[in-house]
Structure formats: C-alpha cells, structure tokens
Image 1 (cartoon, one colour):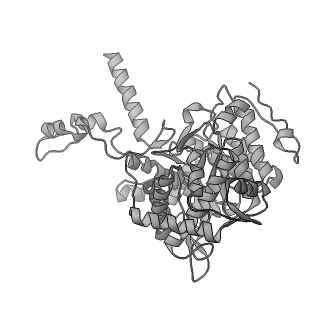
Image 2 (image 1 turned 180 degrees about the horizontal axis):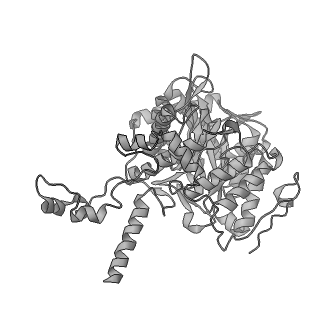
Image 3 (image 1 turned 90 degrees about the vertical axis):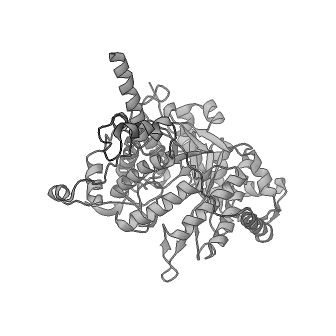
Length: 511
C-alpha cells in the first residue's frame, strides 16, 4: 500500500512538473496547429516576387571575397560585390540543410531539438542598457549579464541560456565575448549562443566549445548558435558573412535574420517586407550550405515597423505580427527551422504597454510555428534595455504559453463523464474524486498574478505586477546559483592575456 502511495505521489509530482511551467521539459513539443493565413496562390506570388528581386536587383556581399567565390562556383552572377541568382537556385542549395537538429547542452538532459513541432524559449539579446525599479536605466555590466543567466537558469519557463543577454560594457570589447561565453558555460547547464561581432570572435566562441565538449563531438554535433543579421536592405557585410561561415564551417548553426523596419530598411507594405525578408534570408541560409553542405541553419525573421511621423522604430505592432504568420508558412515550404518574433515592445517601463505589445508578438511567434524564439523575456525600450522586472513578467507569460502549446488532451479521464455521474445536477465539483485526482496539476499557476480578493490585496500593500516582479527577482527566485557541472565539463576556467585569441589563452578545465 505504501509503495502504491509513493508511486502515485511520484506520478503526480512528475505531472505537476510538466504542467507547471515546463519544469523538466528541455523544450516544448507543440500540440496545437500553426496558423496559416495565406493561400497557396498568394504564397507563390510572394516567392515569385522574391525570385525577381534576387534575379533583377540582387544582393551585395561586401568585404568577403570567399563568399563571392562560393557564389561564382555555385553558378550565381557576380559583378563586383553584387550577386544575382536565377529563380530556384537558392531553394535547390537549401535542400541540403537539415529540417531539424539537436543543439547539445553540457547537461544532456537540457539539449534542445530545433525544428519540426518543437519550440525553444530564450531570453532577449543585445541590449546595451539594463534597468530595474530601484536603480533605473544604466549601462549593463558583467554582473548584470551573470545575474540574467542565473535568473534564466533558475526558471522552468526557459529552455535556452541565450547569448548577449545584455552588453557587459565594463569589459573591453576585445575580450568581452570570452567572458560572456564563459559565463554561459559556468552558470547554466543549458544551450547557449556565441559571439558574431567579428569572425575571430565567432571562432573563439566555437573554440571554447571544443575545449568544453571535445573536438570530435563539436565537429559532429551542434553545440552553439550564432545570430547573424542582414544589413538590410539587400546587403550582407563581411563581418556577418565571416561569422556565418565560421559557424557553418564548424558544423554549428547560424541563425540568419534580416532586420527590417518598414519604411526605413524595407517597404511600408507588409507584403513587400515579407518579400525582402524571404530574399535576404534565403541568400544567407544558402551561403552556409556552400561553406559546409549539411550544416544546421535557422531561418530567422525580424519584421518591424516605424512611426512615420517621428521616424522612431516601433515594436509589438500588429502588422509584423501577422507578417510573422506568413514567414512561418514560407519557412515550412523551404523545410528550415524558424526563428521568429519575440517579446517585443517600445515601452520604457514594465507596464501595460509593454505587456500588450509583448503578448501580441509572442502569440504571433507561437502561432506562426517558430521553433527558436529569441527575445522571449526582458525586452524593453525597443531592445535598448534589459529589464529585471520585465524579465520576470515575461517568464510568467512563457510559463502560460507552455500550457497553451500543450493544447487540449482528449481521453476518457479528461472527458470526465464519471465525474458528472458522481456530482449530479446542481452540485459542485470541489470535493469529487476527479477534482481531487487532478487539483495539483489541472491549471497553470502564475508566479506573479494576484488572484486574491480586493480586500486581501489591499491589506498586503496594493502592489502592481511590476512591484511584485521586482520583489521576486530580488528574492533570488527561486534559487539564483549555478547548477553543478556535469562530469564532462566539471571544473574551473580562467583566461590570461587581454589581447590574445581564445586559442592562445589558457582555458583550463580540470575535474
């Protein structure tokens, strides 16, 4: 009897861990369909328009003679730095890219599957500033960077450690990437991203992974991602293509992302922005396959708008949200994993505007079929500021999205016909056996929402959500300390020399 009770309790604990925000799940497997907004006819029109742009206008590949040589050998028309592509050429090259791949974490239990029906949440990326309700807005430091890694590691609602969660501006640029990658390795046992700000920094990031995982393992498996951006419109610069090729050459995944602000770096129409995004992204993804056939690559998307009155970028608006749905359809037709949307907002505070805009863009990412969702938490101030409070609020939303993506399970127990028979007409379900069997796991439970009666909320201080988020992150939610290293990577690491590359440094792993 005791053994039966223990096994029942363990089963409930496992179910609660799965239901309660994703604890124990290295990534989400979606159980709801994608939302396809365009017909086959209109998708073909977009693809034909992108082919015309590629063939008639072309794309410039600046300061990268190796990339130009790749295109010449592949049969593209190369005139100086301008490259033009015959219709269908890039799609043919992209057939060698994997539809789905594993990014391995140093803790194998936290490796993620990218592509297919899988969804991975990662924090925001690239903010030069950080902010909180106590100290306001300030330049990010390495301490902030490490704090956010630990917060993400402590949360069951994320699956990935991310990359440049904020810029540690107190560290010199020439070695900043090493400190950031090392922090991910030390403070998280999840997957992470590397540097892309220079080819040699990308190579350093990959070399550190070779020291962590072993040369042969890295050559055969993806262990790091590099997020590279198009210099829209229709320009790939050598810094980005050099990093893109470095990741592909090492069999690591580049995340290929245009940055299109409608009316500035792209047309004001949604359809025109989608055409541009498809053309630019296909070219970058195809270049990875010319560097190393079969290398993993992620089809990225960053559509946004701008205020045509002021010229300021706007984020979390409806046009990019619906545009993301179309990008999802196009990526699936290419057979490539998708990075799309994120928790975007222009708000300067973790307020109603921030959550309205962020929720719109996150739901677009969920419904468009995105596999890797960067910027899932912390994004504020048009991606200029990483907010501690917004990070906690977004983590809560990500927890809710776990349950949302689980969909509705249908079996005899879930249909609850016997519960109706037990309770009968006009009675409540509070104490029935079906409720007692499921009460711990039936509903997602927020870490931040206040569901108490007004009088109890008022007696407790009448706090708003941002204040509760402030208290939560400062309390060390739930336990801001590094996880233990696995046997494979257990040890300490140190660097010497500020100017040398990682290959010339002494990064010592002992254990």
